Length: 121
Image 1 (spheres, rainbow, N blue to C red):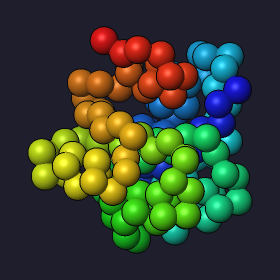
Image 2: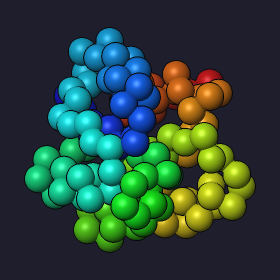
Image 3: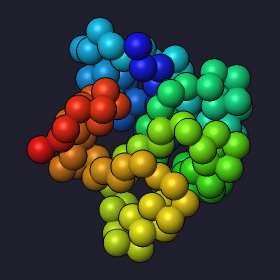
Image 4: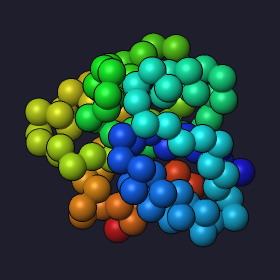
């Protein structure tokens, strides 16, 4: 079973993503947080298999959170899920170790198969 932490400043997005992930018996949501400080504390405490992470967060950016996660837990899967899918952000996240980078508007549905390691279309 894959353990997932959801990090997004929008409660509505967190709830929508949680509902989508709950449809899979192979995914367990271990936490939902809305800022960078809570994200780093939750990662340290929960040690999830996967973190679904937004770029824009109160505190520091999701990019900074990504950098810190990958420095401490390089094996942890990090999926960037954002409305800010500019090439500059995509490239920076990939360089920092993001495993995937998805647009919330167009690629939301790819999250489940990506977490489970299934091919996406």
